[in-house]
Image (cartoon, rainbow, N blue to C red):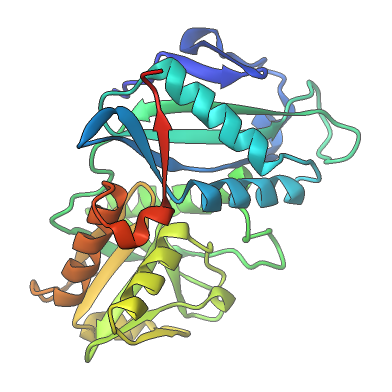
Length: 305
């Protein structure tokens, strides 16, 4: 059972979570015409009166850009201001996950993005480990990742996640933890809601942005960190068979953080993961405000004022 934060941002203000309700006729509910973000917020271990947000600027920019794909405007400054007010109202005392959402809020039917009202909300919930930090098992999904020519994959459009939902449930019902999706060209794209990395001979490899992936913020952070630490990073098409002979495979995402893959289909992966471990340890230190070199990646919000 999810533990939701007591207040939501709804209708331009903070209201009790139970009062943040929508009509059954809300347009986005029927047509998937919404876009969402996902942000982790955690109390500063050294100062509980301060909340740390990882790469809040990048998350706000992506949500603003996703809104433009819905033919509406949502300024980054509006997102930042709402998140600050939301955090100060809730005063979280443990790590939480924030879900900002922009959506077509008109009532009625007809799929469209013109002549329609939109709105913006935020809710949050307590969130520990989204996936096991010890590792997950993955199957190759029978479902194919969408193409950018059929869906705007540069944004987190809610309707696009039907494929992720089908793939995830197929994986779980067949005894796996997670799904890996191939694209229409038969190359590895991503997991149900995470980006994928593999290591071969010390080189960190990840499907490029031309492989119908979501341009993940954690993915970009892993790439930047790895290069700064002297690890060679290659963004390219990845064959399915490469997963079975890789030295390491891991997933990245806001909720998943950095999660190792311990098995792909029937192949057990090596248990030694030096590249992933190095990156994960550094990323953890950054998100907890313990790495001054990357303090600019962390937004600090006072909630005790």
